[in-house]
Image 1 (cartoon, rainbow, N blue to C red):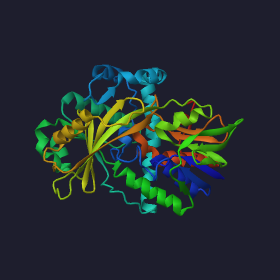
Image 2 (image 1 turned 90 degrees about the horizontal axis):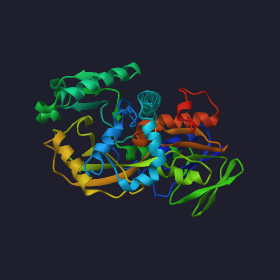
Image 3 (image 1 turned 180 degrees about the horizontal axis):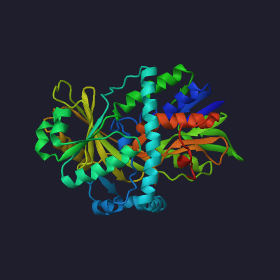
Image 4 (image 1 turned 180 degrees about the vertical axis):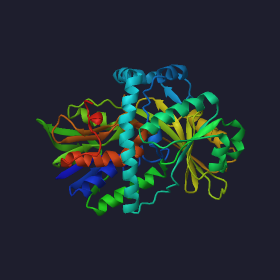
Length: 414
């Protein structure tokens, strides 16, 4: 079949690869001049099943109210965003119930574990290079209460197949010596040895190149206006350059999926969650970290990427505004100093991008009521973590093949 994929971020590009590998003719449309230039461009660089628990959790509503209006809060809700997210917000609150959080987390974790296995296979098979670090994520805790809570959470994740090692502060320093300057401020850590990390943008470029080698065509600078729906089928994608036709269509436009989906009669429960990052030049720093470090108290993570450090860990609900906020940028610099006080004071590049979040935290993958329209969107902060698994799952669904995990939790009505 001829499959038209809308979106050339990490999810869309990886989807194109799996569809081309399955023998389909593939065309990828994107408004940008290249792959991975929006949400995939400068994210935290983590592929982390260990943090695939849904943001819609029992304690989240109280935290949002506590941080309301604080520019330097880890999770910031702008009052001006409320009118556009009322329905989404009600569903989000409903998913904060304990039993729903557990079900959502379990479903997403099953996909994340499959996805990491697929990522490793792709990396080796296609010889992809993306500043990949040694496997593992080290999560730090600065008080005993948080450490105790993390120990309980680690036990839950272990039951689902995630390896987790509880470490004393001294053991964490032995594992990552770059943390020695803050040894006296740590109560302990959890090490997740199977998590991965690297540069998501470089991965997206690499997997797009591998898709091209299998015949996929990428059409850039195509602003997508919507769908031409005829009855229960899509006849074409409407772009500023004219219609693009195929047999099957895959909507993988991240936060912009609801706008385009509406033209096909779909109401997609996705809201943009703006994430921030900084990238700090660290070339020549021999005492830098070897693996990513996440600080639970600061809600920030530092990932080494070649000669740079990537710092991420904040979310803002402000609609489709992706402008930079100076206060939040300063917060990330302060967080870096609190985790790695000796970091080199190199050039700092600021970035913000919109992450497509569903109320449940589960992405939307599979067929829609429109017979030849499929979804692969709504991955929130786990875009790269879930990309390979989501793409393979969708390619199997389109091909009518047996599935390695249950797809029902990710259906539009699921």
